[in-house]
Figure 1 (cartoon, rainbow, N blue to C red):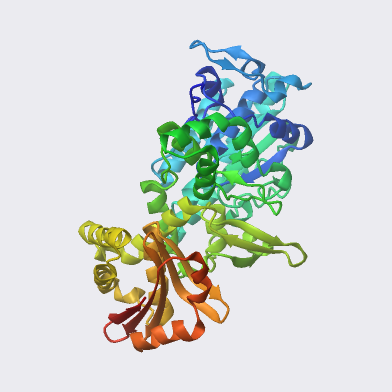
Figure 2 (tube, helix red, strand yellow; figure 1 turned 135 degrees about the vertical axis):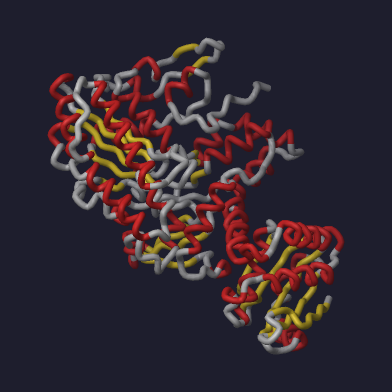
Length: 532
């Protein structure tokens, strides 16, 4: 069997990818269509989905670097195949290119942004033999583009990568966010008047550009973020996965004791499920997928410390999110055009950030049904929400004890110790986050279980109602009903009266019914009962 490929994990420059022998899923058929059919584009995709690599690939195309797209052998002896665009009649002319990359910054202050813009413009002024100007950034940029056009005789290409990075990291600081937005407006407001000097404009980000208000003058930008034709331009489609990575899936399966079909099912549950249009073509997160192939291990790769902290920052500025009700939530198409500063509804932001995806589209009503794309995101989001709710009141030792109790329950059916650990957790939840109702405790428990990676469902429908929580464990199924200022016996009685357990009898597994009672005075579990 052939060895696994070199996976482009963290490789964002197209030239390095090709010359160093990394595998490239050929996106140039879509790129060729884009550059020959239009001019100013905007694309929104979640982080770590290949936007920066796409920008670099476009840069190589407009630099006329046909050599990078033809078939060749690297210095290491790795054969790189010819890419689609090299077979077309593309002219491979060298255009002046102006690339603004805001994806690599670590300091999101206003001064850092000003320095980055000033340095980028200064470098281009030097490149075209122009003196450093004291004019505004927009007027400087306008002068540079016109001079580049005059010197080369070819119109310029402008590529802006992750334009919204500074604004997203300053949510919750309205004054700073406003100043950052003004800096961007000053710089890019000249793009529309420069239309006659521009060959191509491409802007990427997480948030839809209309939300930020910095491209208000660019009403000619074509937003391809939810266009079926371009939905596979970033990421790995299921068709690309099964046709180009069959051997990689086999190798991963061998390392994990699974056959091809079993390993494919696990990959699909963990990394698949992203949909970027109503056509709902299945897309995989490339960063997670390539990490799994490289390490030969299924794990959560998309969420890291940076992801968690930035998500918590966003959540802190928004109305409380009920994790139990996020799945299959319905939003109108107009929701995606709301300005980011109106943080009344977190769902569009969560969609554009990659935490939610399109699950269904009701065309005649213009309604999108959103939900978590896969298990990796569901667990990671729950973990972030858990940290947001618990805040500084629960420490690492408490978290570890809670996890230990869960895994003891997972292995031994010791429900008593687990519920005692949950009571300790509830006692640590800040008072201002306690909404004093049954649903609040239900949602917290569901979030907690999901953050542990449990196979758990909330509001699971049955013939006579909805069970609060259905938890599948190796030793059986647990059906939980939560009551507020009532008794555990009443909770159990509801499970029995409504027949919540009946639909699971066909599975032939042990079923445990669990009634849990919370007290508004104690703000915690006061009693619980179980019935096999």
